[in-house]
Length: 339
Ligand code: 13P
Image 1 (cartoon, rainbow, N blue to C red):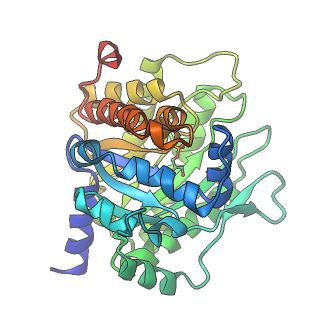
Image 2 (cartoon, rainbow, N blue to C red):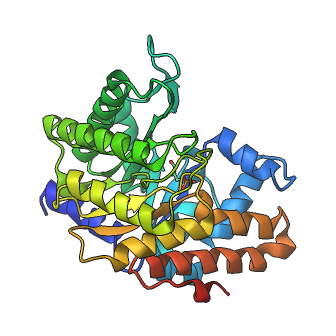
């Protein structure tokens, strides 16, 4: 198999019909916040126990999860019975992936903006992660929306870094998830989000082209076009679905096999409803699915509460959200199924 065919094959498995991706790659700092919310100290063991709870929901993993994004620690960790967690994931048929960026850092001379770091030494890290079993990777750029931001400098620096990362991944035989996230944290309206998302994606695909990245072997992980959380006027679910599709159709070539959204702070049910509305409006040139972190995990985290006694209840909560989002990925979710 040629390298491009191998990458395309992995990408196709990541967006298999009726499945989506579990983002479980919270950095040590982010997972500590999640565990704190359920009064559980963050230790290597508690982080392992939490992730083992999720990956061990075998039926849901087999039926509805095509891939799992991991943080470095998890990729090297073993389940309580000594089996590597990466093997627990692979046994369900899901593709293991790795978060490669080292975080969004202040962008010099661009107040309030960041550029995502992690390019130095990346080829060697890709080689090691591929040996550890990762078949795809993720890199998240953060585009903040405010009074005079984003600037072209921030959009361009992040798009360029993402393109270099994507090229390094493909050269090393793993599929890059390209994640330029326009944040929903501000008070901006949906039309500002639409304009900035279109801008970021246009720049992104231009940079991917310059870097020689094969679009058949990437997955795009974008934000939806949505009102800022603090915007007094919140767009309807229908408007979010419609405007997101307009932007994606303008910007994402049909050669891209799939688009897997981040949830970005949407409620679990909104994230599901939006995805379903978009798929129901098909046919679309690419698969459209989920790569949710919070929107897949929030209910399970709460149900688990850091206690072994709650593992079954937590797995049931996770399995339910996975099922709902899997239905949404084929446009077949409805509110009545949430009962
Ligand atoms: P959320 O779905 O919680 O936004 O996380 C997805 C992700 O991987 C962000 O980089």
